[in-house]
Image 1 (tube, one colour):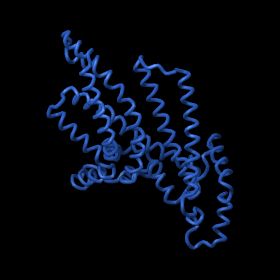
Image 2: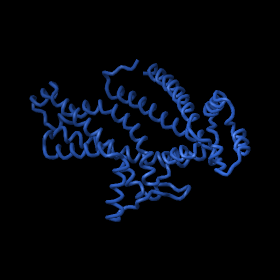
Image 3: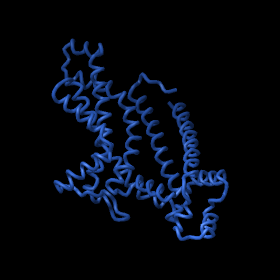
Image 4: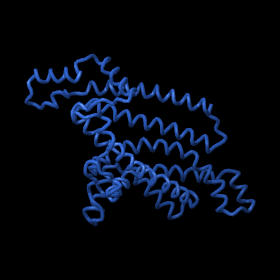
Length: 314
């Protein structure tokens, strides 16, 4: 286990290094000039060139990358070119807000999807199974922005139950107004709920057809005990990989959801960096998302090995 963990950490570091090079290469060839964007259209070429020299944009790309990655290793994330503020300061509140929303969505979607999937799998072809399977297909098919707009129309504009916007005052926490998290959370959980529910249902149906489950039933064990002790543990294990992949879907959905509901999180910060061509801010936010995805996959592998003794990590 220890050797596997060390090897995976080394692989993650190498992966993030390659990702950082790709991010830097892509962001440096984006169209537009950040110096021109900062100064506006009325700036003279001399002013633009002076600002480019001040920001170090005229230096060779190799030196810019080494300064950037070296600063990250030392804990210095640099400064935003457009906002002229330390990136660490900008990320502090935005990252916390996105983390709160992601945790809410994760713990709403995953347990409920597994419970519904287990119920649907043990009641195959029933009316409840058909309804839940149809609802999961609808949830998977609808993009996040469509789901978000439908929730705004129904819960906000029509029923007036929830605020249509999740805007907050600077420095405030979303936990002080938990109602602003409800619609973004429901929007994020749609796709994840559908995938995890259908995977859990399929695994339960497959395990129910195994010989050891049939033997337990023929021995006269109560069906509830068979499901809890034999079916559920073996059906949930393959779902762990889908749960890890759902972290990536969750991070991708955050960008859309935060824009739809005006939620001040990492996704809106990333979009703002793209619009203003704020390369350092764009690079850091993208690297954070990539790191989160890689570490979530590592956690899934370790959890799978801990739950299934047949798996040997070497």
